[in-house]
Amino acid sequence: MSAHPSIAEFQIAGDCLAVGGVPLESLAARVGGTPFFAYDRRLITSRVGYLRSVLPSGVNLSYAVKANPMAAVVQHLSGLVDSFDVASAFEMKTALDTPVAPSHVSFAGPGKTTVELTQAVAAGVTIEMESANEARRVVEVGNRLGIRPRVAVRVNPDYQVKGSGMRMGGGPQQFGTDAEEVPALLNELAATDLDFQGFHVFAGSQNLHADILCEALAKNVALLMKLAGDSPCPIRYLNLGGGFGIPYFDKDAPLDISPVGKALGDLMEHVIRPMLPEARVVIELGRYLVGESGVYVTRVVDRKVSRGRTYLVVDGGLHHQLAASGNFGQVIRRNYPIVVGNRMRSTDLESVTVVGCLCTPLDLLGDNVMLPRADVGDLVVIFQAGAYGLTASPTAFLGHPAPVEVLV
Ligand SMILES: *Cc1c(COP(=O)(O)O)cnc(C)c1O
Image (cartoon, rainbow, N blue to C red):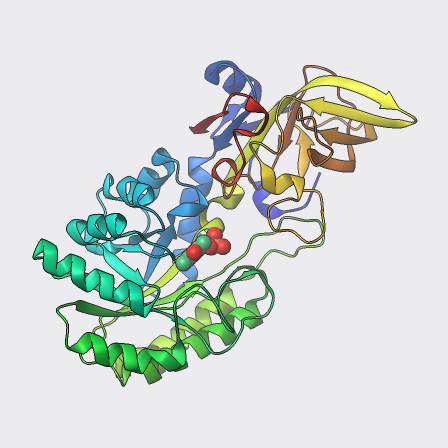
């Protein structure tokens, strides 16, 4: 079994992996069959607790809902984090259905339609404006509704953050206003009736390098301090992004966030607090909070040997868990951690290839993996399925039913 510490945190009952203390065989019976996603409430809670213990006090923690928008997960997190980041009107609704105040919901993302902007202004959430054009439309919407829109400017930095699995800042981008254009935009906004709160910068995702994250934080803070000098009013909101990654593959060492917490503490004490005493400082995370809390549970439908290679064919696949097949933005396909969920203590190992039930060679879930000998009816479980799983997958492809999701 893989050595990822978070995976070791799942309990094992007898020979069976358990989520939220419930063995997966019982859970499969409870939800009515396989495949399904199960998220462990306790693991989410302990992850947030750990993060809080490392981040300096006074820093707000925001959950990026797109990582896992299941309503029950968002509800659970509403009692643990300070705010939500949403990227669509539907995510905004999910966030507003929780007790978190609208002012503590931020709405980012390119291509917000005027209907979405109207919903956001009416709700009173913080709109993270991605362009000058979007800013002008927000002004129009505010005038039409007679409501002063609460806004922040998303900044596209003039540097890149290396080591990110997905880059969303630096160079030309659809995200944010280029740093060098921000002073002119602020100048334009000063004459409008917008409730300008501050800045947002989010430069990339899935970063496992503490040193790079520390450097990115320092650069982000330096950039935003410079831009704050051009602000027509005091800065009350400073969203420094996040990008904390989780280990997906054998060679990935889990991110050690303690240096990041310390670097942020130093920046808070020596730079941010002295210069911007009123600012609500936010770190915004998705997968780091939920990704390791979830598993995707499938059942073996067929076992076959083809020219010497053993295949386990399961009842799930890339239509539910695209990322595990290596087709969600990965350059090189690698295996996600995978186990036989009802044979956790078996030592009778063999090399197998696990494929899904879709009629495409892309539907590969485990390529030449060492697993306990499994047969039809056994459970094959894929870890790191708590973020960018179901909602990041092409569920309509081949027309199989959608899987159940449970928070246990
Ligand atoms: C997607 C996204 C996040 C979350 O990214 P993770 O890698 O899941 O932490 C945070 N902020 C913004 C603006 C995003 O688009």
